Image (cartoon, chains in turn orange, purple):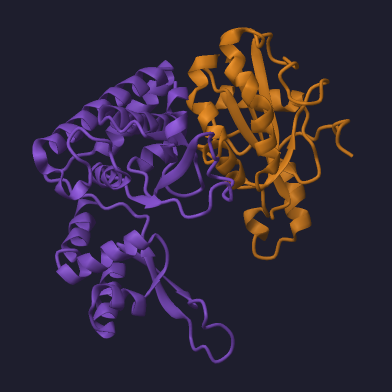
Length: 181
Length: 257
């Protein structure tokens, strides 16, 4: 396994409040799908709000925007959970519950193993993708980038330690999240 | 692009090669030379020659592996194993590019948030296909399909129809409930898995859209053909088509939506 983890954030605009009958099917799927994620190969971590079960109460980006924020071992494990598991059926029905967003609503980026990114950082990554399009710092499934590795000049002999530093150096250093230990 | 497609298809013009290709594709996994030779009833050397021609044309992939039961020292060097290649081969004369059209249309549907319009179109097309299939059967051509005109549709007939529409149905092998990727639904038991995805390229670029479209196409096919003792559900797995066909137990039919 690489020494980086893949972080992903997606946001979705609710068509109605979560307690509205129109959202009942979606709400009923939350627990099973979250359990499925946790049982999926490559799952590392997912963001939960104060209620501790899911992230539907936290609305860091707007009152009608719910967030999905998690860490995975690599692109394949996130892909297999997203599109090749029971989660696909939820995506298939997304227009029943969510309005379409014109701007990018999903972003991915690499995080050094052991560090848990903050929701603020996730928001910044999405803003970066929206402003500049896909880059190694903020990308999508369609335009994805490999985890940071040794810079080309030292690729032959580079030690993993140097590689990690060099990769992390692409983004400004951030204070450790309180939830990481 | 079309040149390599023509060559690949040309390689299949040889009847024994065609038989070998069909056999390996149908097995859905690695096939050794001896097994293939036995299946098509030809000499092993001849079969090896044709299998390698299929590899050269990009129709089969080859791996080195040991067949079970011949492990450990003294079992000899690993045998060549063959499986169908994931590469797509298309021949279109004059040149056409439906792949790009499909990708652009899928993109537009996604931008417009028009998933449900696509599903409705797919459903209607499926119903038309199903009705045409049923009409053909009622016309007396039911012979090999195992379903009497106007009578219930048999599982064999259904598999035959799915093949006709570009799917590769295979019986669900594992015992019910033993496969986490094949969720058991109340009153329905998993019957057929579809080994291939007919919309593979779009399913990779626009998964929810393409898989949702495919599901509605299959649901339409079932309802249009009056195959009401079967149902189609999403049950994606890392490989193959995302749709699972189940047989509905007679006593739970009334609970259907």
